[in-house]
Length: 202
Image (cartoon, rainbow, N blue to C red; front, top):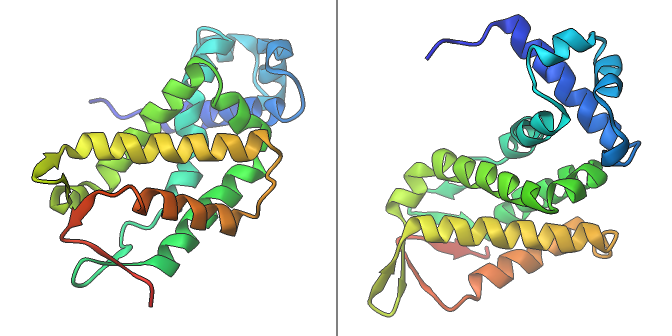
């Protein structure tokens, strides 16, 4: 696959950043291509050379917006002996909540309508790729029945996004640290047997 030109990448990043910033200031419906172009310091013809319209930006912006968020997730959270430290896991999840809170309005837009599906698809793909080694060694069973890993990934992503949406929609009534603890407890209390991994509370 042909590598994208650095100038194209930088222009797209400027457009995405401009769009995200505008969503923090204005209603999505009132944002125009001209608004985006002006904020990104480009002309309209440059915008249209990369995107069809505002909706096209919206459909692609989540991969850009999620990059710093997903990049903060450590892929070495599993220690020797397949041990996951609960305190460390809470720190990682808390960091996710805090980063999302910084751009609350944008993520509320992201979680609504078909945008939610785009967001979940992007997040699910990241989880599958970033933690491929962990998930390849993960065995979750209901009795003797092995549960497919893609279902587990989907469950984790859906639970996380639903939890975050409730938190943002209700104006973050609980601290990020508490939300992280609650979410981890909800997931770990699902009543399924997880083999080869153990969460340590030390």
